[in-house]
Image (tube, rainbow, N blue to C red; front, side, top):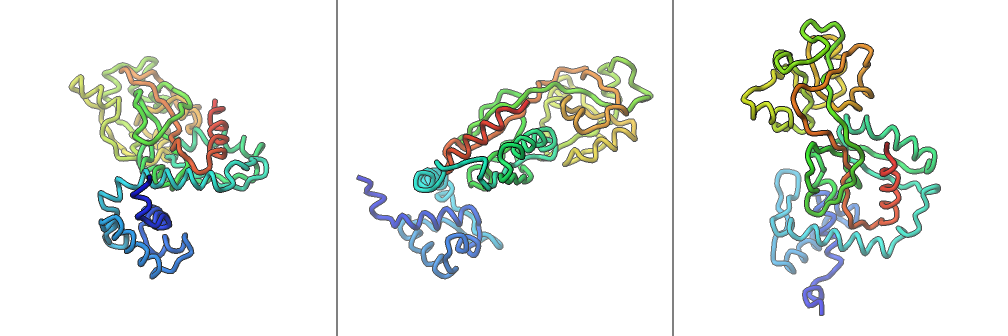
Length: 303
């Protein structure tokens, strides 16, 4: 039984896991309280045991080989589950805990989601720390699988299944609105398709994505809108829209939360756009199962 495991020093799996996450020998060795030379020796033993180089130096980082990429999910899940059973996860007490939860989010999703959550945490678990890092993709797949973040806040315009190894919890759905400044010379009470296409548009693209739902629909009708400003962040958009004749199409909740709507008129888009769905993504297997479940319960109360 477990013949393959009998041939391997299981402590070396900690070396593998640390280097996969940090990509630098010095940082991985520091996490395990090892010297870089001892870490390198352990890595050499692991390479010999698995008959694969596992990591190769590219610039300043150690990048995983295809074999290492295929091994990581199983190793990470096994170590996480074992750590949870052996550690203090079952003794998590939110009222006294000082645990840090790391979330991946864009500035837009952070603005519409975190004020309510953090207010609840401050009331019920004041020692809990919340760290928010910039999300580099809608479900932060790499960050979640490598354990760099605990949760990712992302959006979908269609009913897409979460990626392999991830689960998701739906927070809310929202409809889109088109916002323009009050007194706009082209926009009357009803925004027509012709006027929409005449307008210049501000577009927020946090991941440089090219297939936005509204643009995909317009392309199917062999027309396109005129993008004048493309932003990686939503934060400057309210100032641009309120001071120009440009329009922006965003979910209604975000417009009300981020913009001064006294300066705007809001219109129903003249084309069908799938609703905006905000979700939280996470790894079902966790070494801190009780803490994760508690945080998911707090998240699920979002309104």
